[in-house]
Image (cartoon, rainbow, N blue to C red; front, side):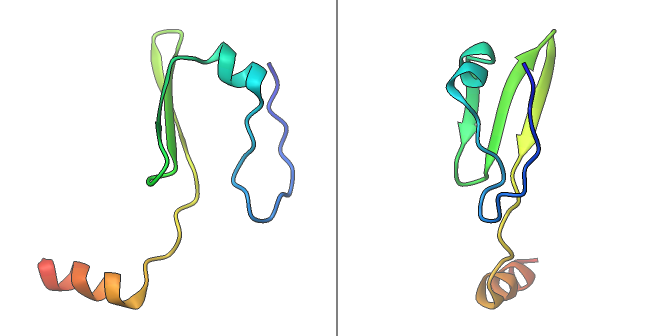
Length: 65
């Protein structure tokens, strides 16, 4: 199963049904843009690009420290 790298702009990746079926079951966390699955007894994590925090979110994070 091949994975092709393409310049897609707004998307981190597009996974086809055949790829998803081959690597099922998997854990998908849409808010964290993360997919995890097992491959040969190893946990593989695909991490999408997370958006930069807003100024307010960054201030709240610093304040809570």
